[in-house]
Structures are given as C-alpha cells and as structure tokens.
Length: 312
Length: 257
Ligand SMILES: [Zn+2]
Image 1 (cartoon, chains in turn purple, cyan):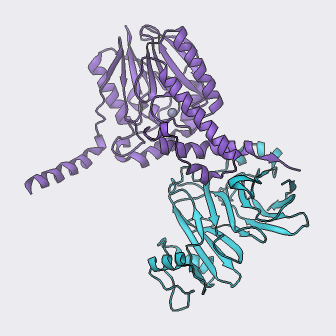
Image 2 (image 1 turned 30 degrees about the horizontal axis):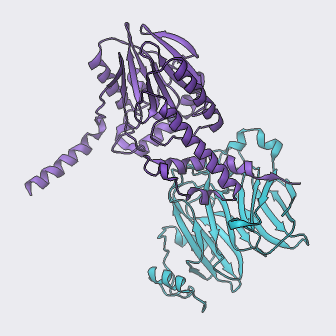
Image 3 (image 1 turned 180 degrees about the horizontal axis):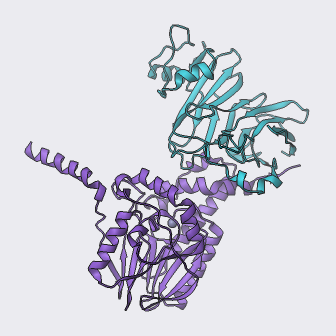
C-alpha cells in the first residue's frame, strides 16, 4: 500500500510540474560541429508537449546557427540551455525553415538574437501564428504556458550565407508550404531539409501543393548529388546518410495524390475517401492514418473539382 | 409503425424506449444524449410525432479535422415513402443545414457542412404517414467553424465564377446511378459582422420531361462551394439542374447521362 501511495504522489507531482516540463533535449552529433534534437514520431499530445520535430544547430568559429526552435517557449529555452552545454559561443543566427508551429514557437527563447526566415514564412507566422499557438495549447496543455508569438526579424534570401563563421547555402523552395527553406552546411555537407523531407513518418499537408512539392524533391535529389550531401536531417523522422528519405517522401506524396484523384474519378465522396484502407506499406508508419485523413480534408476538394465537368 | 424492422426494434431496445411514436406522456430519450434535444424537439420538429430510427444513417467522421468542411452522408434508403429529410446540428448557431425532398430519387445525400463546435448532426426523415424518423451522429470539432470567414468572401475568384456548376454521373460499376454536383458559391453565413448572408437557397433536379427528381432547400451552414452527391435511381437520360441563391442569382444546366 505504501508503494501504491508513493506512485500516486509521484504522478501528482508530474502534473504539478508540467508548467515547467522537461523535454529532455539531448543533442545528437550528426557531423563535425553539427547537432540535431530528434523529436518523437507522433501527433502533438500532452505527453510529448509538441516535441515531434527535428531541430538542430551548427557551431561555427564565431557563433552558433540554430535551425528551428520547436513547439513552445520552454522547448526553445531548453534547447538554448542544451546548446550552451555544448559550446559557450553566442547564438549568431536563428533560422525558421517554414511557418508551422513546431518550427518557430520556441523563438521567444532567442529574442536577443537575429531570427531569419523567408519573406513568405515571416508573413505566415504573422498571420497564422496565434491560431497555431492556440491550437497547440489545446493539444498539449501546460507545456505551452508562457509561449507567445515572436516573428522573425530578418528576411533571408536563397544563396550563400556566411553566419557564425560558417558557410551556408540557403535553398528557397516550396511545396510543403509556399515558403520552405532548406539549409546546407558546406563544411560538414549536412542538409537540414525542414519539412520538405519526412522520413518514415507520414507527411503533413495543411499548406501543401503536391506538384510544387514533387518538383522540389527532384531539385533536392539533384542537390544531394552535386553537393555530395553526407547527412540529411528531415523535419520529422530519423536522420539519414543518404537520399532515401527524399524518395520516401516522394513515394508517399505520389501515392496520396494518385489515390485522391482515383477516388474522385471513381465517384467517391469525402466520407468514402476517408474510410479507404491504407496500403500495406504504410500500415505501420507512425500517424499514417491520422495524416491521411487530414490530407483528405486538405486536398480532396481540389481532386474532386478536377474530376467534375462543366455543363451548359 | 407496424413494419418495424428488427434492426429498428433492436436500436429502440438499446435506447431503452418503447417502439412507438411519441405520445404526450412518453417521449423517447435521445440516443446521443444531447442537452439540446429538448430544444430541437420544440424548435425543429415543432412537437410533431417522431421516433429515433436506426434506419436513418448519418455518417460523418468522429473527429472533423476541418470544421469548415465536415463531410456528411445521409442514407434513409432503408425507409420507404420518404417525403422530406431535414438535416440539422444541435449546437450550430444556425440549426438548419438543409432540407432534401427525394421526389423520384433514392433517399441518399452527401454534402459538407460548417460546424461551429462539437455537436450531434441529425437527419429527421418524414415519411408519408407524417412520422419523423430521426438518426444522427456526434462530430467532434476543433471549433470556430461558422464564424470564420469563408475563403470565397475575400477572394475575387468566385465573383467571376459564381454559380458555376460542374457535375459528373456514373453509369456503371459500384457507383452506378451516382450524380455529383459542385456549385461555386461563398455560402456566407451572415454571422460575421459586415458580411451579410449569401448562400444557395434552392436546387431542383429534374428529368427530361421536367418531372422533379429531387429538390434541396439549402441553408448557410452548408460549406463553401457545395458538393452534393445523389443517386438518380431509375431515372435515365439527361437531367436538368437549376438553382438560385438568396440574392436572386440563378443557374440552369443540363447534365448528360
Ligand atoms: Zn511543417
């Protein structure tokens, strides 16, 4: 009975402490001076506090470049503390790869440093950021306490960028959203692909344009070869040392696109399309069912409109 | 009410009520246990005789990822002599979604709806004997549906394409008899200050001889750019679809088989 009580007390204290919950962020060294924080392969929920994303940082001779800041103020703060345990160097630049909440809601922790993003990303954060934050509060609870919108204050352009003494190449692309940034660190041949690439985790599509996305994946494939990319950090899912996650993402998007068009051409309505079973290869993929259903909501109306014909 | 199917009897037993239409003294309890059912009974059904009936199938996702575009399928083909189907949502600011009169068509309809919050979505089906048969399902939403502006209101696109109709029919295979129809319309609810209600009001489908196949009276909660899925049943040949919105804009199209 005593043991039982102590378990109950322990659990109660978990809840009491959720306001400063610990994401247990452990930097994973993926290349020389390059680190990643790898998130859980799940939906946003109260037990992961929204830590479903991969973020990272690059230690240059003069400072640190941070790539994405996670889903909450506390994630950002804990990320910054974890970086400080690796290097005493100052933060030179924070980059938000795109305007989805798990990639920029930790910005507050870096309010004293430059935060850069593509113009379209900054616009998306300014217009949709509050709604995203509200939604994350609802989905994860107290992990979000104290989180407020902090928009990027620098507009980044495609091309070479020197930051923190490190040589980067910024790739301005689109498809996952209208403004997706991939960050290449030339010294280590590491590519942070943001959510343009998912690995063994179902892609999210709330702002996706599938044709643009597939074109972008072709461009990324070519970039992998010409730049001899050694490490590929996807926005979600395990880190890879080859281009397999690009192919994996393309296969999912192609399947999704084809099956939505087929469903529309066959005359299925949205309810019937929602209940179609996933192909065997995707049945054990984390959150595949949930992401498929969300994608039907986002993308089926256009597939359907394409299958209907004008009359007079 | 003598022709109760065993499925219905079973549903009624599960709901712990007697398999009889409502009398003043004895009212069936709502299988969805909605605190708003009393209001629905008075406001929507106006005290008419009704039963909860498992033959009225209302299909929707348990959780709607996008509350502005929640797919609903109504199938009352298990009932005969269906005169009218009234679809409503207990917790929407505008309760009534649409009325469907399947004059010569099967009692089957698919469409999408804007939901303000989690709510039962119900179909009340009136048969020739005047009894309303009620079916429904619960939909969880993330909220905000009806008060968010429709995309159309801010985009000039729909102004050029207003009431543009696209359709397709399927004449063989598992979807044989199916007709799908999409109408470009912003379907503004009128709940957003400064944006008056602007919505499709009526759609009439008729056969080559001008005989009505099905009629719809559409209210504001139906989603932007409505898409309707119907079944033409045994009616063959070219169909005609004509409709009108509350501002008097009309459409009139031929739908080849
Ligand atoms: Zn994303």
